[in-house]
Amino acid sequence: MDYENLVSDFAQRTKANLELVDREARRGKPGTAFEVTQLVNSMLGLLVFPQQRWFDRIPKTPMSELIDAGWPSITVYGEVPGNDLRGLSRYLRNGITHFNIRFLTDDSGQISGLAIWNIPRNGIRRNWEANLSVVSLRFIALEFIRLLSDQK
Image (cartoon, rainbow, N blue to C red):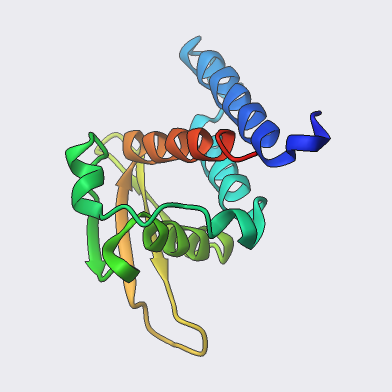
């Protein structure tokens, strides 16, 4: 463990774990690897572990620019604060941290994505919800890994 660059090292180890679980899942032996579970655990760690000082370094790149750069288009209900990456990160962090998630399934009962939502402090209703496919969630996780790996 590189304690001088703890957040960056954590991000790289998270990526290695994701890749390991993905490889094992592709081997096809039922019940040996759970890639969506690992993906949710990875997002929890990537969004919570770095703490606020790293979170404030997330760029305020507008959502439209992210989509133009190849990010997945996310079905969102409500407004992302600032309509940018930092706002999206904040709401993803809140939703995953407070387990405001619901697993979405396809016609065969396999997990196909997640619904993640935010409930404001002292609120009773959701002010934001996003439906993310597993592919989109994995893309976002890898982008957060890249961002955190660049943070020294």
